[in-house]
Image (tube, rainbow, N blue to C red; front, side, top):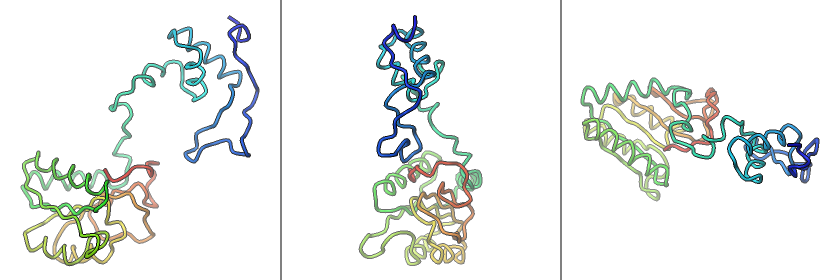
Length: 223
């Protein structure tokens, strides 16, 4: 079947709108198919018996013919990025696993916003499933402000905490986490906020927005 008889209008290039050809995330904006994409759309329709419009959308998005079933029926196991590409992820996992194996007292220090609260709840649930009874602290927005603070850390240390895990915060908390280290606590930071040149003292800092992180996952939140 020829492309013309199939009803595909083929243009050699895309027309930029106001000079813009890509989205903020780098995806190409298409208002028409080039020859290769039109041929791919035709092949998608023939192989999977899909409507022409859907096939053209898939081709325009650059979906390869063999990837169509997975694209239309996605599964979490195939979409989740590899967490081991994040800098310090292995060190963080090893430290948390050691805490579970030895029954340490772990404290989770979260943030008061949505991803901070859900990160705290999720990590506490995981640690409980591992047999621990972790402490957790979410600071008062008015009286404590954002991120770890020395007063709260001192209270956690007094309760026997040996490992402090910050979620959705901690990347810029240089002095509070230095205080935690002076109190004898190990520290793991799990965060996504922009990092400066100087990072806090910690056993692991998992943050895709670290300057030295090459995972390309800077769009992720803390959860």
